[in-house]
Image (cartoon, rainbow, N blue to C red):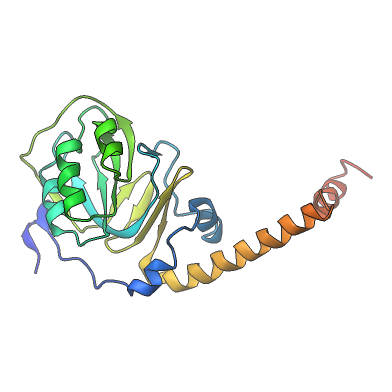
Length: 225
């Protein structure tokens, strides 16, 4: 049952994906996943890794009022071990909604990481704690804890849709979001893509440095004969 009212509520997490399926996404590259999804479902370049650590987990989403982190505090409690907190701060980039104190809680709760479309702070402390953290900005400014806000609702983060329970994969190249309903299909597609890349690397090592289709495309456009 949802707790609260529209705009200020906590919704239950969806049924969890099979842990074995989720584990198959660990270690996959965000760019490969984005390519496998038709070059969609990746966050924009403003969402950057702040601690240099990769993440992979199920999304607990937070829609936060600008300059307020009340519901982010609650999300740390709602999330299960391994989950990734994904936050929309509605455009605020100067009021950090996550820092070292909250990170100590997240680490103790064995959470998988955080992605904030907004500001975080205490990067040295977060790095020392070994916690994967991504954000749009880093800023010394703090925030309130008054609400309103919502947990486990559809949000926009990094200009892509994130649903509660989606698989979030982040590395130094960025963050990809795998829709939970299509996880098995996307896993098959990314494995096929990786096999093609492995084959191409072998061709390059064998001396086939340049792809024939490049010249074929240029001929069709009349650039070369």
